[in-house]
Length: 282
Image 1 (cartoon, helix red, strand yellow):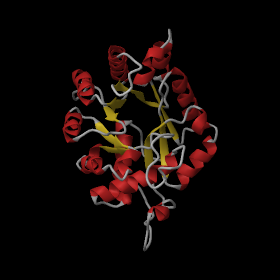
Image 2 (image 1 turned 30 degrees about the vertical axis):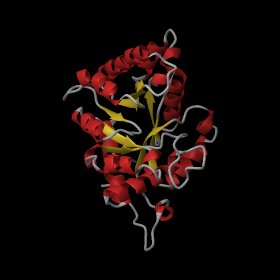
Image 3 (image 1 turned 90 degrees about the horizontal axis):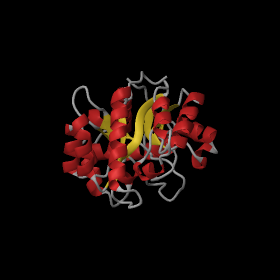
């Protein structure tokens, strides 16, 4: 069990910041100048608010290399993923796939991605995205690592792409920053995927998304910041977002699901450790 100091009378999110929690931010972009320029501060503020582990997620070859390097330097706090986000696949150069596949064998790498599909932005041909997504799914199976899946305006396409790889011994993964409806949720759960929510679930107009979040089984729920993007309420106006703000999303989801933030921290962290096949937090 994850030990957590309970806030006292009149507690709110500020009181939770000093609780001894073990929240896991399962999706943050730590590579690049936005957050890496103050990485020590980012990590210290995360620990102060109970975020014991951060998954540094890649979007291309360069950020894959940087994320692995960050995890190697900070093994107690950072895991890494490697891959190419769908809106970057047109920029894949000779040798990139081989380099990413090699990086995937490092002990600090716990996932492939982020990968997936995107019909919102029109910059990358969809067939090119589909080809890259299939390659990521194949790599995940070869490496026996879960995939981090990006989906925007193409839920049915993602489900169709993942289905051939699903099954007891097939691909594992998470739908990151989930914004789908109940039908898509049911499809993703049927495929064995985990469901992760970011800051959008806290927005005032996200009642429908909160209802979807309420329906996710305890053993499939994850939380993330998608830093440096998607700052949650009540810090939505503050940029950049960072892992320390995960506590706001955690509190929102706990209230939505009718449980304590302590209980939510316990089962979402257990889920992350199980999906990424890592031991208890140190």
